[in-house]
Image (cartoon, rainbow, N blue to C red; front, side, top):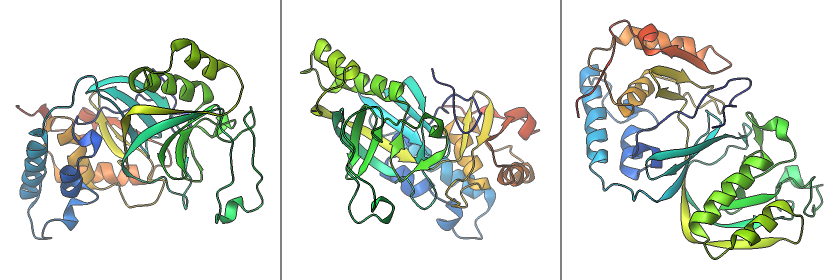
Length: 303
């Protein structure tokens, strides 16, 4: 499992609530971006926690994903792309996302096809690409070995600039190391493009040649989210708010803890705010053990 993230940080991709992780519209409308915009400012903190818990309970009542469904979950601040089969984590990869001003879009998308040995054509009507020239397939192509389409002009793709991985560096696309995007594409082909033989897939992945498009029989769901606060393995992480969206706040702490299955009724609001204040001052990922961050301790919520 890959371990390279923002800068020199070495972290596994945070495990998310199995339904929030795919970005259901109800959960998104209830829980993001700030809960204090959705409830009256006079609402008490216990009532706020009740609202969060209710939203998660309703969301978890949705039908289970098919166990063999492949999906991709991408958290922009964490600079991580995770691949799931149903709710089982298969692999995580470090990525580069759009630099500030060229934000990678958030939302739910679908990968419909792949293009091996792609050309790069400068996008029209983009000032930054005005003087650029088309680049044929090869080691210097900005798209790398393969690109996966999820929006017009937005792709998950390889890159010859491996040093950019783990940073916000692109014009909005999601970059991966060439070896990683080939591995990811192989996995998607095996599950969603069975019409491509293993020998043909090997040829496309290892040899240079003409551009070749492969349509997926089933679209691959891609959820792209902006969640700088995550909880995993009894630790709480705050990733840099790279797009300056004021996304590191106390409500985000409660959301992350409840999504990870913790009972937040005993939390001290002042301790939560202290964690937020410390996290906001960091230029690198900030992490504490839960028992360091919250002296009252946390128990898993009863199901």
